[in-house]
Image 1: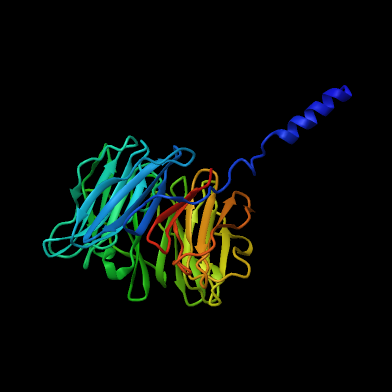
Image 2: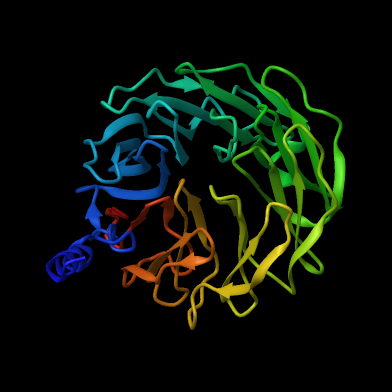
Length: 394
């Protein structure tokens, strides 16, 4: 190759943007200008969408609001989903495969707390608000569990049972319920590739599991092991992984799609505090946990739950009390805030153990050890003045 051609090729490589530098965290953007915001929730979609739901206090009125848009573009103006002088709690948000944001929250109504929900199209059009839980027992924090069948599901516990409902075709579908999903049982769920709802909960110091389908009933409970505080995730092909705290450390078990849970294995030893589990799009399972010294660690696992290397120190020299995990097709994102200062940090964990540098999103906050609202490629939090802020990876 002639020298001039070689030189031009080298210059082209030097000037071309690398994959590592193609994106960075944006300067925090203020999403509200008045009132006091609390309890933000974030979601990302496979189509690059992002949505943030939150509660905003304006005088004696509390409103449920949503802003949606894209990670690399702009966010639409806020839309008001509900407004009341009574209590509103616990907004949750997910993004449907069609780009529509699905939002749920709790509101006091006629003697108890009930779950309400709606959907918001990308153009900002709000669907009808549905009151999903009825009278009698109060409903508690609604959650969108991880799903491998491409559909959005919503679940919430009540005092003696829990309810599950899928969202499809722009509407909420038939319910199912389970006594195992009661508020006192610390229930978690994930949906396998066949659409089966895999429920995991604690009962009397034992980890239990059952499966069900919308419009049907749940199977008889099966005992997995002794433990407490379960978490659940699902791999892309539908294997559900449950993890929980035990006397020996963190224990996990895997259930192939349409099958049953295998034997439990220890994935992290010693006393652990907060723990979260997430399956990456690349097929790994990641377990983040906080040790008694308030240090944040990560253990990578194969789909068969074999350890990949030793636990990794995610935040050297820092202390926290919890962390948040989110994923997209390219990476897993972990965020936390420091216990003393409240400084907010995030790391991007690419497949194969390629972990990005710690990025400080805010030098201080009121979170003090609690993680910000986190989606893949976005974090949101409320500053000391009650303003909602967000930073995006783009």
